[in-house]
Length: 111
Image (cartoon, rainbow, N blue to C red; front, side):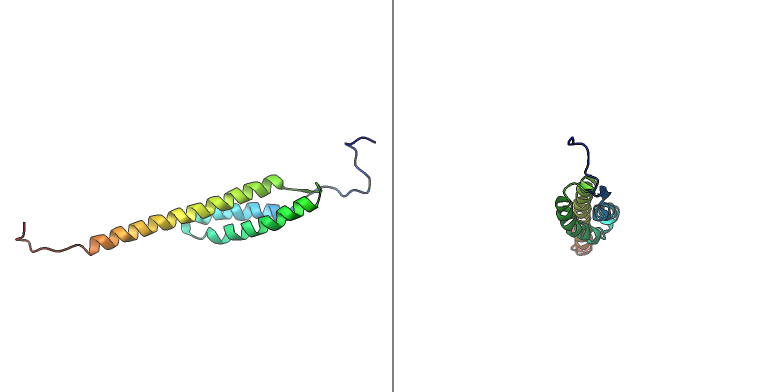
């Protein structure tokens, strides 16, 4: 028996559904990240990624989806970074607007 032949009682390798869900949520977080809504799916994706990683390791090769899992985690972190960047931009815009409104008004005859 060679190392490439499987035992007849071994289960067929199947795609990990949690890894696919992490990928989908990561993609959703990138799409909604600039609207600050990307934090929610990104957080769920990162929490699911921990569970999925444990399951992939425990399955000993019979669960497929490690690449999907890594890609989903990267996309989730990208969505979080986009949301933080948008929050910083909104704070800067708010401060600039506030500064324009609160300027000192001098009399027109003052040089």
